[in-house]
Image 1 (cartoon, rainbow, N blue to C red):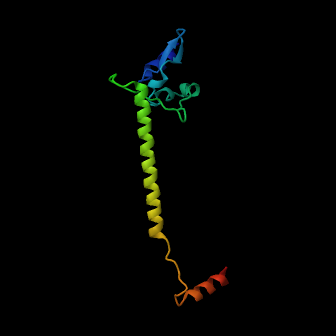
Image 2: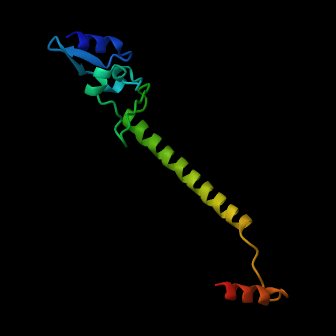
Image 3: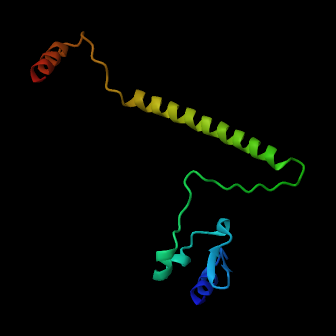
Length: 125
């Protein structure tokens, strides 16, 4: 009734519609912007669960028609895969570079204090 109409009116994305003349229903979930207007009212917050679906992505592909949307999607995913591979390589190189610049200097047995350091380590272990 009145609450359903108020819910429909408060939603800026027009997600809800009235069904059976008194019940609000989610008609257009993809238009939801997560503005939270639908859960600000305490009575609505108890009846509405606002959430996102994990690992769920909605893609919108616009084309002039020269290339089918399916082909555009596959090409875009391949470009994304290539960019991720480049980022992964850059991170590995940066990690290796960081490790080589922050590694402690190697001790050599030719150092006059090397035996003393080794002896101290053995006593404290």
